[in-house]
Image (cartoon, rainbow, N blue to C red; front, side):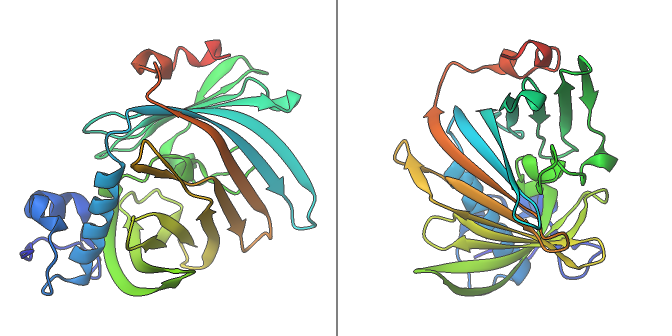
Length: 274
């Protein structure tokens, strides 16, 4: 049975994940009819993370399709590298190959569970590496509808959680949970997350801005399973409801457990990425 932790967030309806993880330990994954909505929401997030642990690293190709309100489109081609860091957040790198005006641009993320991520952007036209400050992470990533903070791994400890309900999502049944960023510099007040109950895959996320207006919706699909365990979405579509713009990320050519290591994810190495 999940015991109730005494610690509670200053926000009455959410519980800080880091505090509850310490309190609940592995028992957070046990089922209990007595669990509060906060404990159930955290339990779902922990289970999803546990199922995704152990992949080691992967590389992939990504197509970024930008579409404005009038339907005009532009495309970008990227390479993606991700390295798992046990006990901390993942390290990720995005390298732009096309079109020519962004070729060589590289974005590096060192995600963390218990502190703000480190993010750097290399701009070849300026031949310099720019650090992305915490206060700027709600800004657009390379003109897309994804913010810099959306590009980081969504670590469990970075949010507080509350389970809301179960509901159908296509042919599946999804849990709907609310998660609230712990970081006060986040561009979001809260997010609603739809995850299927069988594999804990994320199918939709609704983002609400600091004024609690529905800002964006992310939908995910074309999931494929790799190494007989890890589910990865083949398509992610972010729609901005205020501007009418959208961005579609299409993922292909996944390769897991390659020869990537820490040396492939350094700030000084950004300028040498090819």
